[in-house]
Image 1 (cartoon, rainbow, N blue to C red):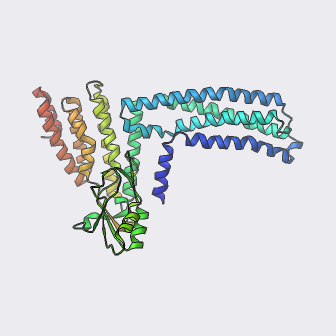
Image 2: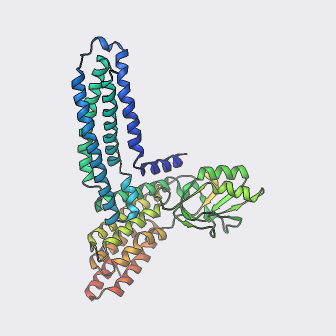
Image 3: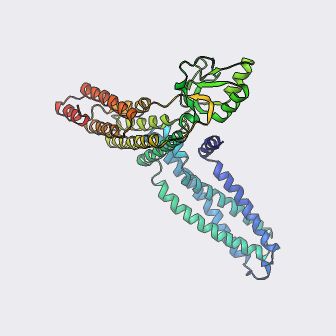
Length: 415
């Protein structure tokens, strides 16, 4: 249940219209709730605020908020375009999910609607003097909220879409994905390595797309109901086609087609990958950012070096989490493959090592990162570091011309 709610919440965060819509509904409700003050004893002691003063304040709020909201949308679109063009289009979803910008836009639109509704209600004598006083207090608080939100948002929008900010957001998404995987290793299932051969009936999906999510709780419930065992053949992030099974089902004793349809409902395909159950996707995005920075058109080795440091921090988190993880399997009828560190390193460093093979500063930094990660105390990470260090050095020897550069990289690699 927690994973399902988190997945749907993350998809909602990527929709720009959801929060403004909710804020608009709240704004209309607040405008009419002020009338409740006229039904209380407050009418005897609150000061009588003139209609003109409240109307002036609401006019100011209404006239300015629409302009500010339009300005906010323009600034956000520019920042989103900058993130997609300077980093990679795959980073767009994490930039779009920026809470500060979405909250600011929601406040601006919500306050505009609040001002318009309250102004119409005021001019139609919906409020007595207690209601006008409540409306005045609410309007002052709303005006203060707008000012604070605008100041905070201006500080955020100055960074939104910049390369460093985009890398930080992708790093946070990958870190959350790593933490979720370690909180429930193998998505909460049993190790697929316990099954010597998958066997069983292959489960294929009729669609083509990336496997975004596996609903493990639903899969477990259906496997228990049908007395089956399900062995996943792929992990979220895999590009699936009808010709390749996503799982193998053992123990079928009922109508095959009906059982397969029930189990297939737990696998969700889409056109794009997401970060939730797919830790490798974030590493691919970071590698794409570094590769674009190393292209001749951009020529920004500093960004590639920044990505190397980011990946090193993420693998340090991965190593620590593996050492501390003691989670038990939640789903005893579903077998799931492990994430291989070699695959993670392929996603994080193959493209970077290829495109930075001719740059001595990037190559040295990459070899130092491999040396550092090899000392994290994880045997699988150490093996992946040694393999990728050799690969990167082989690329350097093929591309670099100056012998001194090659020798400097060799010394950094320890060979």
